[in-house]
Length: 136
Image (cartoon, rainbow, N blue to C red; front, side, top):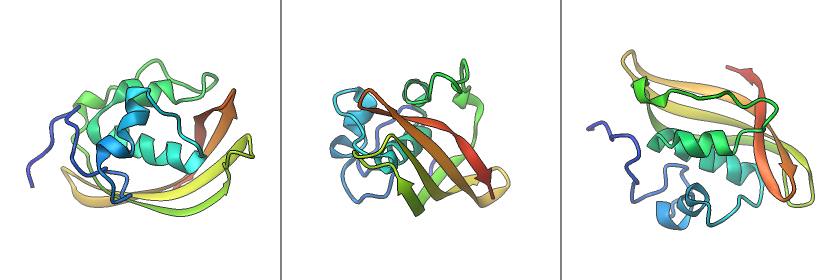
């Protein structure tokens, strides 16, 4: 499978929703829609990693923990699948939530996966990624 260049918008959404990118995570990346839940933000951030949208990742990172930059351009990792394993809180009725997920990828060493338990906080109606409680 050929490597997709960064910032190329795929037809199918990388988050695994089964929807078109333009109808799923695309509006969040474009800033024309907001993630209604922590899980929706997690899915859109996974899609941002998949398409190389560093600006979106930084924009949705909590100001208290956000790095200055990510430097995605040098990463040869290509994300191939997302599975949500568990969620707590993170609904429109909450201000905090966690999402445990597994992200599959292929890089120079071959196929692999990363499992993470991420925390999110809602501030003024917007969800933000705070940090990861653990990696596997």
